[in-house]
Structure formats: C-alpha cells, structure tokens
Amino acid sequence: MVVNLFNDDATKVDWEILTDGRNIDCVVTDPPFGVEYQSRRGKTAEHDRINSAIANDASLDDAVPCFLDAINNMAHLFAEECEMYVFTRWDILPEWVEAVSRLSVIGFKYKALLVWDKGNLGMGDIDASWGASHEIILYLKKGRRDLNGQRSSVLHFDRPSFGSRIHPTEKPASLLEVLIKASTDKGDLVVDPFSGSASTLIAARSTGRDGVGTELDSKFFELANIRLGQESLFG
Image (cartoon, rainbow, N blue to C red; front, side, top):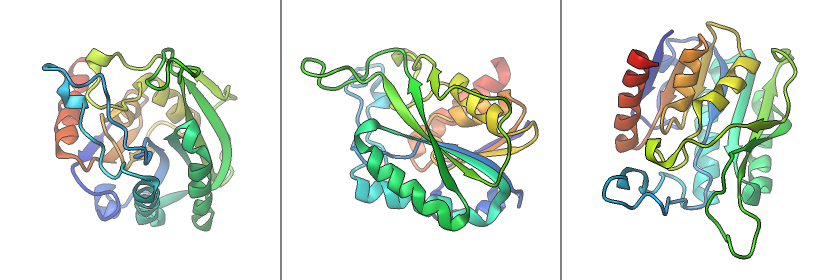
C-alpha cells in the first residue's frame, strides 16, 4: 500500500494534490491539545529528541482553531461515508467536544467517546490524585457506514515505551489499527493532518489501506520518515 508523509501545514496545504484527488475515507489524528505539553522524561543526553514543545499547543486558543482549520481545509475531499477519530484529554474534554461538534456543518456527527487505557501512569499530580492512565478518543461519523464488527468503547493498548518513542505523545500503531479496521476497508484512504511519529500511516499500511499525512515540525517529520522507511523494510 502507498503511504506519504509531507512536511507541511495541514491548515494551508492543498490536500487535493497530496491525495491525488481521492476521497478521504477516514481521519485518525492526535492534534495539539492546547495544554503546552512537554515531556519531562525526555530531557536526557540520549533522548532530548522528545522534549521539544509541540507546535500550536500553547493554549486551546491556538490548538482548537488549528484543528478546525485543518479539517475544513480538506472538507471537500471527504467521502460520503467517512469517519474520524480525534485524541484528547479528560481535563479539556468539554472544549474539544464543543470543537468537534462544529464539524456538523460539513456533515460529521459526534457519535461516541472512546477510552484508551494506556496500561501505565502518565505524569501529573501523583501525590494527591489518581494517576492519568488513559486518554479520550472522540469518534465522529459522516454518513451511515456500518462498523466492521461491534467494538468495545474501552481499548487496552500499552503506551509505547519511552526509549522507543520519537514523539512526546506517540500512539501505538496497534491501537490505531483497530480504529482503522473498524472504519475502513482495504484500499481506502486514511489521513492524519497531525502525523507526529507517523503511527497512523504505519497502521494504515499494515492493514492494507493507503495513508497520507502532514507534519509541521521538520524535526519530527525527519524522524517519522526514518521510521516509515524502517517499518517498510522490517515491519
């Protein structure tokens, strides 16, 4: 299958050129949340690659318009039946539910909230609160396509190990494979406008789908391209 990653701005790029004019069948994306996330574990001599700030993540006022602009920029290419998965966090959930609800004007309905059980604790107030061991996935639907089999709304997949990650918020490709297989058929086109570590593209290729993604940060783009090449040779 064909996957292509571009070092470009999802809000401005010509998606018709990037997709060769094809309809987009599914979007799986982990946009900037708007929380100024920065890995505190990444600052080591060997692993400072994942300590960088994420573009457009400074605040919700940056992140939400960036996400909406990216989706609206490709709106004319969405298939009549198209599904979308958007990652976010529990503490900014109301703002992101409101954001994705605005996509009703281009035919998407917010249908369900999925929970990704990451299998380990994230950073946070570990002394005075419960550990953050999950993330939220907002599921949107355009049209009336049936899912490829019924699925639980709680998904258990371990977060990629620190030493293997090339991006601070990297998602496991195995998790994304489940989403992609539920919402597309082989040969369909999956798009990720905030590709980060290219996990969505790797998951698309491994499930027999085509994938197109953009990544604004040139450093993450270069690391993701290397990963795509390695997965192609050894995956």
